[in-house]
Length: 608
Image 1 (tube, rainbow, N blue to C red):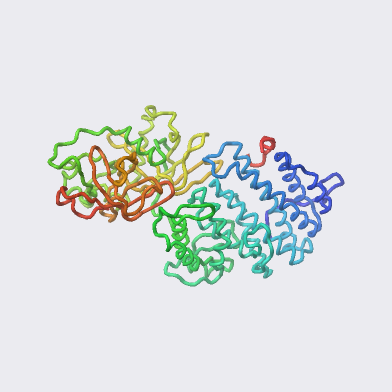
Image 2 (cartoon, rainbow, N blue to C red):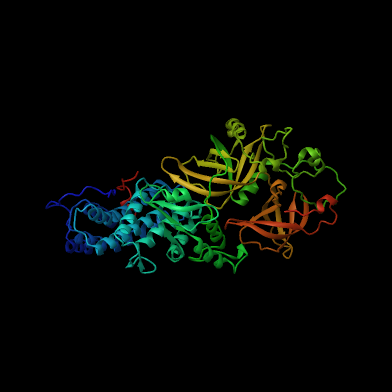
Protein backbone atom coordinates (compact mmCIF):
# COMPACT_ATOMS: atom_id res chain seq x y z
CA UNK A 1 0.00 0.00 0.00
CA UNK A 2 1.26 3.45 -0.91
CA UNK A 3 1.26 6.17 1.78
CA UNK A 4 3.21 9.41 1.93
CA UNK A 5 5.89 8.90 4.60
CA UNK A 6 9.55 9.99 4.94
CA UNK A 7 12.43 7.58 4.40
CA UNK A 8 13.48 5.58 7.52
CA UNK A 9 17.16 5.16 8.42
CA UNK A 10 19.00 3.43 11.25
CA UNK A 11 19.85 5.96 14.01
CA UNK A 12 23.48 6.69 14.83
CA UNK A 13 25.04 7.14 18.26
CA UNK A 14 24.62 10.91 18.22
CA UNK A 15 21.08 10.88 16.79
CA UNK A 16 17.93 11.69 18.72
CA UNK A 17 17.23 8.87 21.24
CA UNK A 18 14.25 6.73 20.27
CA UNK A 19 13.89 4.45 23.28
CA UNK A 20 10.64 5.35 25.12
CA UNK A 21 12.40 5.76 28.50
CA UNK A 22 14.88 8.23 26.99
CA UNK A 23 12.13 10.11 25.18
CA UNK A 24 10.18 10.38 28.44
CA UNK A 25 13.28 11.73 30.25
CA UNK A 26 13.84 14.25 27.42
CA UNK A 27 10.23 15.46 27.72
CA UNK A 28 10.46 15.98 31.50
CA UNK A 29 13.53 18.18 31.03
CA UNK A 30 11.83 20.55 28.58
CA UNK A 31 10.75 23.92 29.98
CA UNK A 32 7.26 25.10 28.96
CA UNK A 33 7.92 28.61 30.23
CA UNK A 34 9.68 29.44 26.96
CA UNK A 35 6.92 28.48 24.54
CA UNK A 36 8.95 29.21 21.43
CA UNK A 37 11.88 26.99 22.41
CA UNK A 38 9.52 24.30 23.74
CA UNK A 39 7.61 24.20 20.42
CA UNK A 40 10.83 24.14 18.40
CA UNK A 41 12.23 21.16 20.33
CA UNK A 42 8.99 19.16 20.17
CA UNK A 43 8.68 19.79 16.44
CA UNK A 44 12.31 18.88 15.72
CA UNK A 45 12.05 15.81 17.98
CA UNK A 46 9.00 14.57 16.07
CA UNK A 47 10.72 15.08 12.73
CA UNK A 48 13.78 13.09 13.83
CA UNK A 49 11.75 10.23 15.31
CA UNK A 50 9.73 9.95 12.10
CA UNK A 51 12.92 9.50 10.09
CA UNK A 52 14.41 6.74 12.25
CA UNK A 53 13.65 3.04 11.99
CA UNK A 54 12.58 1.46 15.30
CA UNK A 55 10.38 -1.38 16.61
CA UNK A 56 6.64 -0.64 16.19
CA UNK A 57 6.11 -0.91 19.96
CA UNK A 58 8.72 1.81 20.57
CA UNK A 59 7.22 4.07 17.91
CA UNK A 60 3.69 3.80 19.30
CA UNK A 61 4.84 4.42 22.87
CA UNK A 62 6.86 7.48 21.83
CA UNK A 63 3.93 8.94 19.88
CA UNK A 64 1.52 8.41 22.78
CA UNK A 65 3.94 10.23 25.08
CA UNK A 66 4.06 13.16 22.65
CA UNK A 67 0.28 13.59 22.45
CA UNK A 68 -0.02 15.73 25.59
CA UNK A 69 2.92 18.06 24.73
CA UNK A 70 1.64 18.60 21.19
CA UNK A 71 -1.86 19.28 22.51
CA UNK A 72 -0.41 22.00 24.74
CA UNK A 73 1.32 23.48 21.69
CA UNK A 74 -1.90 23.45 19.64
CA UNK A 75 -3.80 25.26 22.40
CA UNK A 76 -1.12 27.96 22.54
CA UNK A 77 -0.87 28.44 18.77
CA UNK A 78 -4.64 28.57 18.40
CA UNK A 79 -4.94 32.19 19.51
CA UNK A 80 -2.57 33.44 16.81
CA UNK A 81 -4.81 32.71 13.83
CA UNK A 82 -8.39 31.83 14.86
CA UNK A 83 -11.10 34.50 14.54
CA UNK A 84 -8.66 36.94 12.96
CA UNK A 85 -9.37 39.12 9.95
CA UNK A 86 -8.07 37.78 6.66
CA UNK A 87 -5.70 37.56 4.96
CA UNK A 88 -3.47 36.84 7.95
CA UNK A 89 -0.23 38.80 8.39
CA UNK A 90 2.99 36.94 7.57
CA UNK A 91 3.73 36.07 11.21
CA UNK A 92 0.31 34.49 11.70
CA UNK A 93 0.63 32.63 8.41
CA UNK A 94 3.89 31.09 9.60
CA UNK A 95 2.28 30.12 12.89
CA UNK A 96 -0.65 28.36 11.20
CA UNK A 97 1.83 26.64 8.87
CA UNK A 98 3.78 25.52 11.95
CA UNK A 99 0.57 24.27 13.57
CA UNK A 100 -0.23 22.23 10.47
CA UNK A 101 3.35 20.95 10.25
CA UNK A 102 3.21 19.62 13.85
CA UNK A 103 -0.19 18.02 13.14
CA UNK A 104 1.19 16.41 9.99
CA UNK A 105 4.30 15.10 11.76
CA UNK A 106 2.41 13.38 14.58
CA UNK A 107 -0.08 11.93 12.09
CA UNK A 108 2.87 10.74 9.99
CA UNK A 109 4.31 8.88 12.99
CA UNK A 110 1.14 6.77 13.24
CA UNK A 111 0.98 6.49 9.46
CA UNK A 112 4.45 4.87 9.40
CA UNK A 113 3.07 2.02 11.54
CA UNK A 114 0.24 1.48 9.05
CA UNK A 115 2.65 1.56 6.10
CA UNK A 116 4.99 -0.99 7.72
CA UNK A 117 2.09 -3.33 8.51
CA UNK A 118 0.49 -3.07 5.06
CA UNK A 119 3.77 -3.73 3.26
CA UNK A 120 5.08 -6.42 5.67
CA UNK A 121 8.09 -4.31 6.61
CA UNK A 122 7.57 -4.91 10.34
CA UNK A 123 5.41 -7.15 12.46
CA UNK A 124 2.61 -4.90 13.71
CA UNK A 125 -0.18 -6.57 15.68
CA UNK A 126 -3.81 -5.56 15.21
CA UNK A 127 -3.97 -3.74 18.55
CA UNK A 128 -1.18 -1.37 17.53
CA UNK A 129 -2.61 -1.08 14.02
CA UNK A 130 -6.07 -0.10 15.31
CA UNK A 131 -4.60 2.66 17.49
CA UNK A 132 -2.44 3.90 14.61
CA UNK A 133 -5.39 4.14 12.19
CA UNK A 134 -7.60 5.96 14.68
CA UNK A 135 -4.91 8.41 15.79
CA UNK A 136 -3.82 9.23 12.22
CA UNK A 137 -7.41 10.08 11.18
CA UNK A 138 -7.84 12.00 14.46
CA UNK A 139 -5.01 14.37 13.57
CA UNK A 140 -5.99 14.63 9.92
CA UNK A 141 -9.50 15.65 11.00
CA UNK A 142 -7.96 18.40 13.11
CA UNK A 143 -5.74 19.38 10.16
CA UNK A 144 -8.87 19.91 8.05
CA UNK A 145 -10.46 21.98 10.82
CA UNK A 146 -7.48 24.33 11.18
CA UNK A 147 -7.22 24.78 7.41
CA UNK A 148 -10.94 25.56 7.26
CA UNK A 149 -10.66 28.18 9.97
CA UNK A 150 -8.49 30.30 7.69
CA UNK A 151 -10.24 29.09 4.50
CA UNK A 152 -7.00 27.50 3.25
CA UNK A 153 -6.68 24.85 0.54
CA UNK A 154 -5.97 21.24 1.47
CA UNK A 155 -2.49 20.07 0.28
CA UNK A 156 -2.10 17.39 -2.36
CA UNK A 157 -1.97 13.76 -1.20
CA UNK A 158 -3.74 14.41 2.12
CA UNK A 159 -7.06 12.99 0.90
CA UNK A 160 -5.21 10.01 -0.60
CA UNK A 161 -3.74 9.15 2.81
CA UNK A 162 -7.10 9.59 4.56
CA UNK A 163 -8.92 7.30 2.12
CA UNK A 164 -6.17 4.64 2.12
CA UNK A 165 -5.92 4.53 5.92
CA UNK A 166 -9.66 3.87 6.21
CA UNK A 167 -9.60 1.36 3.34
CA UNK A 168 -6.80 -0.60 5.01
CA UNK A 169 -8.59 -0.64 8.39
CA UNK A 170 -11.73 -1.86 6.62
CA UNK A 171 -9.80 -4.61 4.81
CA UNK A 172 -8.44 -5.80 8.20
CA UNK A 173 -11.98 -5.59 9.68
CA UNK A 174 -10.76 -3.10 12.30
CA UNK A 175 -12.80 -0.09 11.12
CA UNK A 176 -15.79 -0.61 13.43
CA UNK A 177 -13.91 -1.53 16.63
CA UNK A 178 -14.08 1.10 19.39
CA UNK A 179 -10.99 2.28 21.27
CA UNK A 180 -10.39 4.86 23.96
CA UNK A 181 -9.16 8.31 22.99
CA UNK A 182 -8.72 10.86 25.76
CA UNK A 183 -8.87 13.70 23.23
CA UNK A 184 -12.22 12.63 21.79
CA UNK A 185 -15.37 14.05 23.35
CA UNK A 186 -17.05 10.63 23.57
CA UNK A 187 -13.89 8.91 24.97
CA UNK A 188 -14.55 5.85 22.79
CA UNK A 189 -14.37 6.01 19.01
CA UNK A 190 -13.79 3.84 15.92
CA UNK A 191 -11.81 4.37 12.73
CA UNK A 192 -15.09 4.51 10.81
CA UNK A 193 -16.38 7.20 13.17
CA UNK A 194 -13.43 9.43 12.37
CA UNK A 195 -13.66 8.74 8.66
CA UNK A 196 -17.36 9.65 8.66
CA UNK A 197 -16.57 12.78 10.70
CA UNK A 198 -13.98 13.86 8.12
CA UNK A 199 -16.35 13.22 5.21
CA UNK A 200 -19.30 14.97 6.85
CA UNK A 201 -17.21 17.98 7.84
CA UNK A 202 -15.84 18.30 4.31
CA UNK A 203 -19.38 18.06 2.89
CA UNK A 204 -20.54 20.85 5.22
CA UNK A 205 -18.70 23.31 2.94
CA UNK A 206 -16.64 24.87 5.76
CA UNK A 207 -15.44 27.63 3.42
CA UNK A 208 -19.08 28.83 3.43
CA UNK A 209 -19.27 28.92 7.25
CA UNK A 210 -18.45 31.90 9.41
CA UNK A 211 -15.14 31.53 11.25
CA UNK A 212 -16.93 31.42 14.59
CA UNK A 213 -19.20 28.59 13.40
CA UNK A 214 -16.57 26.31 11.89
CA UNK A 215 -15.24 24.92 15.18
CA UNK A 216 -18.75 24.68 16.67
CA UNK A 217 -19.87 22.54 13.73
CA UNK A 218 -16.72 20.39 14.02
CA UNK A 219 -17.27 19.88 17.76
CA UNK A 220 -20.84 18.72 17.09
CA UNK A 221 -19.71 16.08 14.59
CA UNK A 222 -19.09 13.24 17.12
CA UNK A 223 -22.76 13.45 18.09
CA UNK A 224 -24.04 13.91 14.54
CA UNK A 225 -22.16 11.03 12.88
CA UNK A 226 -24.25 8.59 14.94
CA UNK A 227 -27.11 9.48 12.57
CA UNK A 228 -25.12 8.78 9.39
CA UNK A 229 -24.34 5.54 7.60
CA UNK A 230 -21.36 4.62 5.41
CA UNK A 231 -22.14 2.03 2.78
CA UNK A 232 -21.20 0.78 -0.68
CA UNK A 233 -24.91 0.20 -1.48
CA UNK A 234 -26.84 3.37 -0.60
CA UNK A 235 -30.62 3.52 -0.45
CA UNK A 236 -32.07 4.98 -3.65
CA UNK A 237 -33.32 8.57 -3.51
CA UNK A 238 -35.35 10.83 -5.80
CA UNK A 239 -32.35 12.86 -6.94
CA UNK A 240 -30.31 9.81 -7.95
CA UNK A 241 -27.32 11.60 -6.37
CA UNK A 242 -25.20 10.49 -3.41
CA UNK A 243 -22.42 11.94 -1.27
CA UNK A 244 -19.50 9.60 -1.96
CA UNK A 245 -15.81 9.12 -1.36
CA UNK A 246 -13.41 7.17 -3.59
CA UNK A 247 -10.97 5.10 -1.56
CA UNK A 248 -8.42 5.04 -4.38
CA UNK A 249 -8.36 8.81 -5.04
CA UNK A 250 -6.85 12.06 -3.76
CA UNK A 251 -10.11 14.03 -3.89
CA UNK A 252 -12.60 15.02 -1.17
CA UNK A 253 -16.08 13.47 -1.03
CA UNK A 254 -18.43 14.67 -3.74
CA UNK A 255 -21.67 13.79 -5.52
CA UNK A 256 -21.98 10.72 -7.72
CA UNK A 257 -24.91 9.23 -9.62
CA UNK A 258 -26.29 5.75 -9.04
CA UNK A 259 -24.59 4.45 -12.20
CA UNK A 260 -21.20 5.80 -11.06
CA UNK A 261 -21.55 4.07 -7.69
CA UNK A 262 -22.29 0.71 -9.30
CA UNK A 263 -19.21 0.99 -11.51
CA UNK A 264 -16.65 1.07 -8.67
CA UNK A 265 -15.96 -1.18 -5.67
CA UNK A 266 -13.84 1.50 -3.95
CA UNK A 267 -16.75 3.92 -3.57
CA UNK A 268 -18.40 4.55 -0.21
CA UNK A 269 -21.59 6.60 0.14
CA UNK A 270 -22.39 8.64 3.24
CA UNK A 271 -26.14 8.60 3.92
CA UNK A 272 -27.36 11.68 5.79
CA UNK A 273 -31.15 11.13 5.83
CA UNK A 274 -31.44 10.35 9.56
CA UNK A 275 -29.13 13.22 10.43
CA UNK A 276 -31.31 15.67 8.51
CA UNK A 277 -34.39 14.47 10.40
CA UNK A 278 -32.52 14.91 13.68
CA UNK A 279 -31.40 18.45 12.83
CA UNK A 280 -34.89 19.45 11.68
CA UNK A 281 -36.24 18.38 15.07
CA UNK A 282 -33.64 20.58 16.76
CA UNK A 283 -34.96 23.71 15.07
CA UNK A 284 -38.73 23.08 15.19
CA UNK A 285 -38.99 24.73 18.60
CA UNK A 286 -37.49 27.99 17.39
CA UNK A 287 -38.89 29.25 14.09
CA UNK A 288 -37.77 32.84 14.66
CA UNK A 289 -34.19 33.04 13.40
CA UNK A 290 -33.48 36.26 15.28
CA UNK A 291 -34.00 34.46 18.61
CA UNK A 292 -31.44 31.83 17.72
CA UNK A 293 -28.27 33.56 18.85
CA UNK A 294 -25.06 31.57 19.20
CA UNK A 295 -23.99 31.00 22.80
CA UNK A 296 -20.77 29.14 23.70
CA UNK A 297 -20.76 25.98 21.58
CA UNK A 298 -24.42 26.26 20.59
CA UNK A 299 -24.93 26.36 16.81
CA UNK A 300 -27.31 29.01 15.53
CA UNK A 301 -30.60 28.06 13.89
CA UNK A 302 -29.56 29.75 10.65
CA UNK A 303 -26.36 27.66 10.50
CA UNK A 304 -28.37 24.48 11.12
CA UNK A 305 -30.69 25.42 8.28
CA UNK A 306 -27.76 25.99 5.98
CA UNK A 307 -26.27 22.60 6.92
CA UNK A 308 -29.59 20.89 6.27
CA UNK A 309 -29.66 22.42 2.80
CA UNK A 310 -26.01 21.52 2.15
CA UNK A 311 -26.42 17.89 3.24
CA UNK A 312 -29.72 17.51 1.39
CA UNK A 313 -28.65 18.48 -2.11
CA UNK A 314 -25.72 17.84 -4.38
CA UNK A 315 -25.32 21.46 -5.44
CA UNK A 316 -23.75 22.41 -8.73
CA UNK A 317 -22.92 25.80 -10.19
CA UNK A 318 -25.95 27.10 -12.07
CA UNK A 319 -24.24 29.83 -14.11
CA UNK A 320 -21.15 29.90 -16.27
CA UNK A 321 -18.42 32.32 -15.26
CA UNK A 322 -16.65 34.91 -17.39
CA UNK A 323 -13.03 35.62 -16.42
CA UNK A 324 -12.36 39.22 -15.46
CA UNK A 325 -9.46 41.06 -13.87
CA UNK A 326 -10.14 44.66 -12.86
CA UNK A 327 -10.28 46.78 -9.73
CA UNK A 328 -13.67 47.59 -8.26
CA UNK A 329 -15.08 49.71 -5.44
CA UNK A 330 -16.53 47.66 -2.57
CA UNK A 331 -18.22 48.42 0.75
CA UNK A 332 -18.61 45.70 3.41
CA UNK A 333 -21.27 45.84 6.11
CA UNK A 334 -24.77 47.29 6.10
CA UNK A 335 -23.79 50.70 7.46
CA UNK A 336 -20.78 51.03 5.13
CA UNK A 337 -22.92 50.19 2.10
CA UNK A 338 -25.62 52.62 3.17
CA UNK A 339 -23.11 55.43 3.64
CA UNK A 340 -21.29 54.69 0.37
CA UNK A 341 -24.51 54.90 -1.65
CA UNK A 342 -25.65 58.04 0.16
CA UNK A 343 -22.29 59.73 -0.46
CA UNK A 344 -22.48 59.01 -4.17
CA UNK A 345 -26.12 59.76 -4.82
CA UNK A 346 -27.67 63.19 -4.72
CA UNK A 347 -31.44 63.27 -4.61
CA UNK A 348 -32.94 65.27 -7.50
CA UNK A 349 -35.87 67.57 -6.96
CA UNK A 350 -39.00 65.40 -6.82
CA UNK A 351 -41.79 65.99 -9.27
CA UNK A 352 -44.92 67.61 -7.97
CA UNK A 353 -47.54 65.15 -6.97
CA UNK A 354 -50.96 65.25 -5.44
CA UNK A 355 -49.95 62.44 -3.14
CA UNK A 356 -49.32 63.69 0.43
CA UNK A 357 -45.58 63.90 1.18
CA UNK A 358 -46.06 62.19 4.54
CA UNK A 359 -46.56 58.79 2.92
CA UNK A 360 -45.36 56.84 -0.06
CA UNK A 361 -45.79 53.34 -1.42
CA UNK A 362 -43.33 50.82 -2.80
CA UNK A 363 -44.04 48.87 -5.96
CA UNK A 364 -42.25 45.92 -7.45
CA UNK A 365 -40.59 46.64 -10.78
CA UNK A 366 -42.85 45.76 -13.72
CA UNK A 367 -42.10 42.47 -15.46
CA UNK A 368 -42.76 44.10 -18.85
CA UNK A 369 -41.31 47.56 -19.14
CA UNK A 370 -42.47 47.95 -22.73
CA UNK A 371 -46.08 47.60 -21.65
CA UNK A 372 -45.75 50.63 -19.39
CA UNK A 373 -43.09 52.83 -20.99
CA UNK A 374 -43.54 55.72 -18.61
CA UNK A 375 -43.93 53.79 -15.38
CA UNK A 376 -40.65 55.08 -13.96
CA UNK A 377 -41.25 58.65 -15.14
CA UNK A 378 -44.62 58.70 -13.39
CA UNK A 379 -43.20 57.57 -10.06
CA UNK A 380 -41.32 59.61 -7.52
CA UNK A 381 -37.51 59.21 -7.68
CA UNK A 382 -36.46 56.03 -5.87
CA UNK A 383 -32.80 55.75 -6.88
CA UNK A 384 -33.16 52.20 -8.08
CA UNK A 385 -29.97 50.84 -9.65
CA UNK A 386 -30.30 49.73 -13.25
CA UNK A 387 -28.19 47.23 -15.16
CA UNK A 388 -25.96 48.11 -18.14
CA UNK A 389 -27.03 45.11 -20.23
CA UNK A 390 -30.66 46.13 -20.81
CA UNK A 391 -31.62 45.94 -24.45
CA UNK A 392 -35.17 45.31 -25.54
CA UNK A 393 -35.73 42.91 -28.40
CA UNK A 394 -38.73 41.50 -30.19
CA UNK A 395 -38.49 38.29 -28.17
CA UNK A 396 -37.71 39.63 -24.74
CA UNK A 397 -38.38 42.66 -22.64
CA UNK A 398 -35.74 44.91 -21.16
CA UNK A 399 -37.34 44.82 -17.71
CA UNK A 400 -34.76 44.90 -14.91
CA UNK A 401 -36.23 41.92 -13.09
CA UNK A 402 -36.82 40.05 -16.35
CA UNK A 403 -33.06 40.19 -16.82
CA UNK A 404 -32.65 38.43 -13.48
CA UNK A 405 -35.38 35.88 -14.17
CA UNK A 406 -33.75 34.85 -17.45
CA UNK A 407 -30.27 34.52 -15.93
CA UNK A 408 -28.90 37.61 -17.69
CA UNK A 409 -28.31 39.82 -14.65
CA UNK A 410 -24.54 39.64 -15.02
CA UNK A 411 -23.20 38.75 -18.44
CA UNK A 412 -20.04 38.83 -20.51
CA UNK A 413 -21.13 42.14 -21.95
CA UNK A 414 -21.32 43.41 -18.40
CA UNK A 415 -17.77 42.19 -17.85
CA UNK A 416 -16.65 44.14 -20.94
CA UNK A 417 -18.35 47.27 -19.61
CA UNK A 418 -16.30 47.01 -16.42
CA UNK A 419 -13.01 47.13 -18.33
CA UNK A 420 -13.40 50.88 -18.78
CA UNK A 421 -13.63 51.31 -15.02
CA UNK A 422 -9.85 51.44 -14.54
CA UNK A 423 -9.73 54.97 -16.00
CA UNK A 424 -11.88 56.26 -13.18
CA UNK A 425 -10.07 54.69 -10.22
CA UNK A 426 -8.10 57.85 -9.54
CA UNK A 427 -11.15 59.46 -8.04
CA UNK A 428 -11.51 56.79 -5.34
CA UNK A 429 -10.41 57.34 -1.80
CA UNK A 430 -7.17 55.38 -1.55
CA UNK A 431 -7.49 55.03 2.21
CA UNK A 432 -10.87 53.30 2.03
CA UNK A 433 -10.65 49.98 3.96
CA UNK A 434 -12.51 48.01 1.26
CA UNK A 435 -10.74 49.49 -1.77
CA UNK A 436 -8.32 46.69 -2.63
CA UNK A 437 -10.64 44.22 -4.33
CA UNK A 438 -10.41 42.94 -7.90
CA UNK A 439 -12.99 41.01 -9.89
CA UNK A 440 -11.60 37.55 -10.61
CA UNK A 441 -14.65 36.36 -12.55
CA UNK A 442 -18.34 37.14 -12.90
CA UNK A 443 -21.50 35.14 -13.59
CA UNK A 444 -25.26 35.61 -13.64
CA UNK A 445 -25.36 34.70 -9.96
CA UNK A 446 -22.59 36.92 -8.63
CA UNK A 447 -18.87 37.57 -8.44
CA UNK A 448 -15.60 36.02 -7.37
CA UNK A 449 -13.48 38.81 -5.86
CA UNK A 450 -9.78 38.76 -5.01
CA UNK A 451 -8.13 40.82 -2.27
CA UNK A 452 -5.24 42.80 -3.73
CA UNK A 453 -3.39 44.03 -0.65
CA UNK A 454 -1.02 42.89 2.10
CA UNK A 455 -3.31 44.42 4.71
CA UNK A 456 -6.25 42.55 6.24
CA UNK A 457 -9.74 42.84 4.80
CA UNK A 458 -13.10 43.14 6.55
CA UNK A 459 -14.64 40.24 4.63
CA UNK A 460 -16.56 37.58 6.54
CA UNK A 461 -18.82 34.79 5.37
CA UNK A 462 -22.43 35.92 5.74
CA UNK A 463 -21.58 39.64 5.62
CA UNK A 464 -23.34 42.09 3.32
CA UNK A 465 -21.23 43.55 0.54
CA UNK A 466 -21.92 46.42 -1.84
CA UNK A 467 -20.19 46.37 -5.23
CA UNK A 468 -19.98 49.53 -7.33
CA UNK A 469 -20.29 48.89 -11.06
CA UNK A 470 -20.11 51.08 -14.11
CA UNK A 471 -23.14 52.05 -16.19
CA UNK A 472 -23.16 52.67 -19.97
CA UNK A 473 -23.24 56.44 -19.31
CA UNK A 474 -19.95 56.04 -17.33
CA UNK A 475 -21.65 56.74 -14.02
CA UNK A 476 -21.20 54.35 -11.10
CA UNK A 477 -24.00 52.46 -9.36
CA UNK A 478 -24.20 49.86 -6.61
CA UNK A 479 -25.33 46.25 -6.24
CA UNK A 480 -25.89 44.49 -2.93
CA UNK A 481 -24.89 40.88 -2.25
CA UNK A 482 -23.79 38.56 0.52
CA UNK A 483 -20.42 36.82 0.93
CA UNK A 484 -21.15 33.09 0.59
CA UNK A 485 -17.66 31.59 0.78
CA UNK A 486 -14.01 32.45 1.30
CA UNK A 487 -10.81 30.74 0.16
CA UNK A 488 -7.17 31.52 0.93
CA UNK A 489 -4.00 30.26 -0.75
CA UNK A 490 -0.48 31.63 -1.04
CA UNK A 491 -0.77 31.53 -4.83
CA UNK A 492 -4.05 33.46 -5.22
CA UNK A 493 -4.34 35.19 -1.85
CA UNK A 494 -7.81 35.74 -0.38
CA UNK A 495 -10.81 35.12 -2.64
CA UNK A 496 -14.50 35.50 -1.81
CA UNK A 497 -17.68 34.37 -3.54
CA UNK A 498 -20.49 36.94 -3.64
CA UNK A 499 -24.12 36.10 -4.37
CA UNK A 500 -26.10 39.10 -5.60
CA UNK A 501 -29.26 39.57 -3.53
CA UNK A 502 -30.77 42.19 -5.79
CA UNK A 503 -29.63 44.26 -8.77
CA UNK A 504 -31.43 47.30 -7.30
CA UNK A 505 -31.34 48.87 -3.88
CA UNK A 506 -32.85 51.81 -1.99
CA UNK A 507 -31.16 53.43 1.02
CA UNK A 508 -33.51 54.19 3.90
CA UNK A 509 -33.84 54.21 7.68
CA UNK A 510 -36.31 52.75 10.15
CA UNK A 511 -37.55 53.57 13.63
CA UNK A 512 -39.63 51.37 15.92
CA UNK A 513 -43.07 52.90 16.39
CA UNK A 514 -43.12 52.17 20.13
CA UNK A 515 -39.78 53.99 20.57
CA UNK A 516 -40.36 57.42 19.09
CA UNK A 517 -37.19 58.95 20.56
CA UNK A 518 -34.62 56.33 19.55
CA UNK A 519 -32.04 56.96 16.88
CA UNK A 520 -33.07 55.56 13.48
CA UNK A 521 -31.38 52.46 12.06
CA UNK A 522 -29.78 52.63 8.62
CA UNK A 523 -31.11 49.91 6.35
CA UNK A 524 -31.40 48.86 2.73
CA UNK A 525 -34.56 48.16 0.76
CA UNK A 526 -34.60 45.56 -2.04
CA UNK A 527 -37.62 46.01 -4.36
CA UNK A 528 -39.66 43.00 -5.40
CA UNK A 529 -38.90 40.95 -8.52
CA UNK A 530 -42.16 39.97 -10.24
CA UNK A 531 -40.82 37.37 -12.71
CA UNK A 532 -39.26 35.51 -9.77
CA UNK A 533 -42.33 36.10 -7.57
CA UNK A 534 -39.95 37.62 -5.06
CA UNK A 535 -41.47 40.20 -2.70
CA UNK A 536 -39.83 43.42 -1.54
CA UNK A 537 -37.51 42.90 1.43
CA UNK A 538 -35.71 45.01 4.00
CA UNK A 539 -32.11 44.44 5.15
CA UNK A 540 -31.82 45.31 8.85
CA UNK A 541 -29.12 44.92 11.53
CA UNK A 542 -29.04 41.40 12.97
CA UNK A 543 -30.93 40.66 16.21
CA UNK A 544 -32.35 44.21 16.50
CA UNK A 545 -35.81 43.41 15.09
CA UNK A 546 -38.36 40.60 15.20
CA UNK A 547 -41.12 39.29 12.99
CA UNK A 548 -44.33 41.28 13.52
CA UNK A 549 -42.48 44.45 14.57
CA UNK A 550 -44.10 47.77 13.61
CA UNK A 551 -41.70 50.28 12.06
CA UNK A 552 -41.70 53.70 10.47
CA UNK A 553 -39.72 53.53 7.24
CA UNK A 554 -38.13 56.76 5.99
CA UNK A 555 -36.67 57.22 2.49
CA UNK A 556 -36.02 60.49 0.64
CA UNK A 557 -38.12 62.77 2.80
CA UNK A 558 -41.07 60.37 2.88
CA UNK A 559 -42.42 58.08 5.60
CA UNK A 560 -44.51 54.95 5.70
CA UNK A 561 -45.55 52.52 8.40
CA UNK A 562 -44.73 48.87 7.85
CA UNK A 563 -44.99 45.55 9.68
CA UNK A 564 -42.14 43.06 9.47
CA UNK A 565 -43.10 39.65 8.11
CA UNK A 566 -41.28 36.45 7.13
CA UNK A 567 -37.51 36.29 7.63
CA UNK A 568 -35.87 35.40 4.31
CA UNK A 569 -32.33 35.18 5.67
CA UNK A 570 -30.44 35.73 8.89
CA UNK A 571 -26.64 35.45 8.95
CA UNK A 572 -25.60 37.04 12.23
CA UNK A 573 -24.54 40.18 10.31
CA UNK A 574 -27.96 41.16 8.97
CA UNK A 575 -31.56 40.00 8.81
CA UNK A 576 -33.62 40.10 5.62
CA UNK A 577 -37.35 40.66 6.28
CA UNK A 578 -40.37 40.65 4.05
CA UNK A 579 -42.87 43.34 5.11
CA UNK A 580 -46.28 44.85 4.42
CA UNK A 581 -47.30 48.49 4.37
CA UNK A 582 -49.91 49.33 6.99
CA UNK A 583 -50.66 53.00 6.15
CA UNK A 584 -51.36 52.72 2.42
CA UNK A 585 -54.89 54.12 2.39
CA UNK A 586 -54.00 57.22 0.37
CA UNK A 587 -51.87 55.38 -2.19
CA UNK A 588 -53.15 54.85 -5.75
CA UNK A 589 -55.24 51.78 -6.42
CA UNK A 590 -52.47 49.96 -8.27
CA UNK A 591 -50.33 50.14 -5.14
CA UNK A 592 -52.98 48.38 -3.07
CA UNK A 593 -51.77 45.05 -4.46
CA UNK A 594 -49.75 42.78 -2.18
CA UNK A 595 -46.04 43.81 -1.90
CA UNK A 596 -42.92 41.73 -0.72
CA UNK A 597 6.91 29.90 3.43
CA UNK A 598 5.93 26.38 4.29
CA UNK A 599 8.83 25.09 6.48
CA UNK A 600 10.85 28.11 7.60
CA UNK A 601 9.86 28.76 11.22
CA UNK A 602 13.17 30.18 12.52
CA UNK A 603 11.76 33.71 12.67
CA UNK A 604 8.79 32.87 14.90
CA UNK A 605 10.12 30.68 17.72
CA UNK A 606 10.98 33.73 19.82
CA UNK A 607 7.55 35.29 19.36
CA UNK A 608 5.42 32.34 20.50
